[in-house]
Image (tube, rainbow, N blue to C red; front, side, top):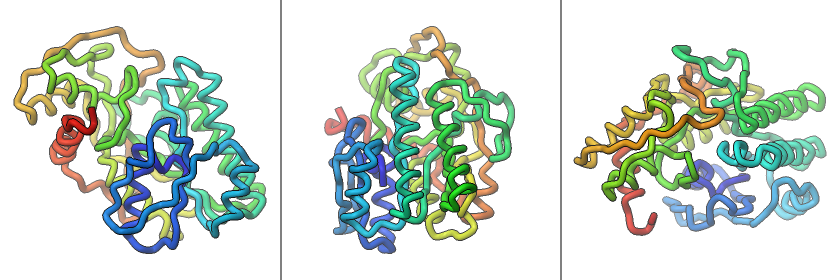
Length: 311
């Protein structure tokens, strides 16, 4: 599991540990975006956490030689905001990690690559519920690099016969998300609302996204790993419901019993105005639909991001 100490990755690791189907889970993470303290396993089992650079092919070969690994779940990435401030570094990191893992797979060091894409590869599609067949129109270097990785993964499969599953998640929310500059509206809004500070809104706040609770996404990964029908497929993890930034802040303020104050700023570079996903393929192939109620998920976020341990 690359990026297994991060926001989504740590929840996926917990889910895989809890189902008892995996002899050992090895987390390869450079810990630049998280720490091993992220894990809150519901079992006595724990992953083997290695501080590793996923771009380093010789280091990866050593890991594969040390453990009997048949599947790689690739969640390590560079954040979208880094691709705005340093597009070269972000794109190189994303692409080099993917190529390193694909080369190791081509060498026969493991069998299946389950790799995380992003809904950002579609760009902005106002009013459209996107299926996996829609054209890719990435607007940021981050999204373009991820689109390249998806296509490179497919090309290795066509050329070398490697096995893959591409998981394309829409926006995830839940505990353990790291707040970065100009990103992460839910933890940022909770922090501002709880301290009486204005919530910064970029543009008019009518940008809309499709949000899925992170534990639902982890469950989707569990199901994908045991589904033969998922092999060679690109699969959305989406709720099919779009929510605007302003409506999210309003929902949080209502649950917290406070009145929101806003500070509007200029829109962010590369920001998309609307994304909404069609999750029917995940329902068909994986028997998966997100089940976490929106407000219950927000309450979990409020509990986590308001806690002293988070601050």
